Length: 457
Ligand SMILES: [Zn+2]
Image 1 (tube, helix red, strand yellow):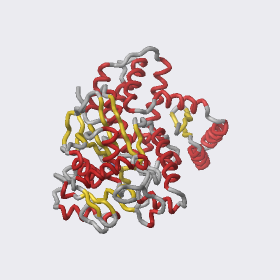
Image 2 (tube, helix red, strand yellow):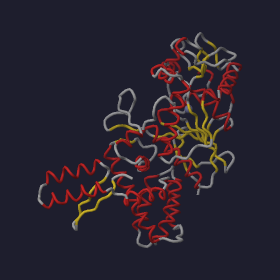
Image 3 (cartoon, protein in one colour):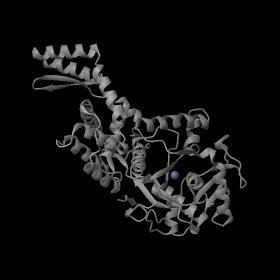
Image 4 (cartoon, rainbow, N blue to C red):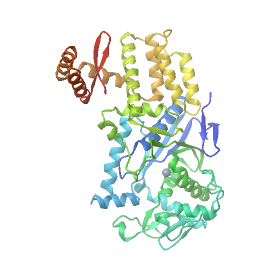
């Protein structure tokens, strides 16, 4: 059974066939390390992780490459604001990024390539583009001439004339050349010491050329899959295609996968609106990072997500339940076998353009299935976990520890609350419940009494 993936380029689901099976050359656009990634970015990295794991589950060997943009306008601006140098900003936020990835149980790509360590490759590619007449020098930099690109804008389905495209492309790089996009920006006073020597003039690379140069250097002129967030289709990926294909005359990437946006309830989430949520915000609110992974998996990766704290709460509750069931099955289990019927369905759902909502629903069906033994449930859930990536065994350990370790302080608050309830002092009992919850525990009132449990791991 082959995996089918929705290719933005063709606008439909296609059966995936890599150039040299079982190897898959996968490139994904990584972070610009000048601030913490927001949950919109993180959703894309989770989707990429699911893609990689699903391909590996199918027996492919994935050569995954991700760039780290550690030089650009935003970074230079930030380093001036923080009165530090570019390297320090980059290394600070790269560390935060990698620890976010780990907290979300996202597998580390085979190669993480920093832009500043691959300037030579970018210069070579720009020189080639100049040589074949697809790039030209202007007063402030080297530009790509989009009239030299066949089918410019095909990925983004742009059906507008070049002049209209040019207006959209007019960004901070392009004040003097609104027609085209910058490959290289010459050194300017405000750049301070941030510049690299190049035969065509000292300066620094544009963002688009970074990805093309590093992707082709690491994986060859034609990639199997290139991924990114939906917002990268235009201009970033459009420009990557234009410059790469102009240089090689070959298809740059055979499949293009894009993740849907994350919106807040009423607005788009963006730095300019000031409503950006990061993983540290999630953790500050007493959520386990993997609750966000669970939330991401409840939606198909292409569907836009409307984020709310209530939805995250529901995901955390579901994940806790899943882990609780898992620990219950564990106490019974020894030497279980993967249930073939469930494994077959699981594969089928993932191979249908990574349908994680159906894969998750299947895990729940399995949990509740009275015809499957607990030990087989454990074996099958662990098999699913290779792709879902909750790290169930580790979570189960964390869960058991937190159950055992309910502190005396909480226990006495619970007793006090029980007393207040018996005395029908509901105001006091509510206050105590709130206090308990603030410390990361919750009380479930049941007919026959109550239960204390951790509301986070
Ligand atoms: Zn990129």
